[in-house]
Length: 338
Image (cartoon, rainbow, N blue to C red; front, side, top):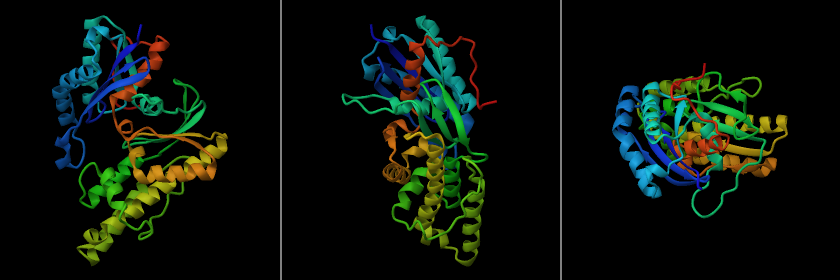
């Protein structure tokens, strides 16, 4: 008998549903929310309203695409946190109601753990290589920047994290300063391809150990743009590609440098990349260059599994199902770690 699980992701501004059958993703549907673009960032109230509108159609499409009837489901999984509380409540409430109605188990999934487990996603006919335990994962997103030691599908140890801003936030804030569309990370990545990464110098954070800091870099970027605009009101338009390339290069150099140090200190050469920022083309290129230099085995999920998606929720839930690790129906979502 197959193990079929429906995963639901609603931690921020994407409503997503996916179906996994015996460890293989057979559908993954995502509804994006364009309403936030004009505000330059996610508006929590608008996000939760959009989730309410999207969640039933998205789940219906996921089941239809997988050619699965709801009565075939063995469990319902959902993102418990961290994320926007209103958005999480929409997903968790629907998951509970659906599981109760079908009289099947409920599985709660941590959003960051799911990003790491995206490395194990199998879809299509061709089997994708997965890391061996233990491995190190550089998890980079809009809200989190961490290096994790992963000893099993359920055992994670944080060995480094940002002491202030996340790398993804640093990208988005710089994009906002330059008047670029939201989300800013992908726009900076695109413009940087035509820029000179050495055109502008930004000081790298001098944080001891493996931890990260991006608040000072963000401020440095703001001051450079502000001071140059006083001299030339067209400074951004005339230098936007070089600004993007230089700023992006600095952030990624910091990320990869810390990752190299973590690999040396732990002696682990199995390296994974996860989180929304792992879709960045220059980060991927730099990681692959480091692979050759450091003799790493590198694992990077396909682009569609880097940003928020329900496939990673379903994948994580599959391993929890095998351990019969089910949630109580009174489980509450959490917006952040205490």
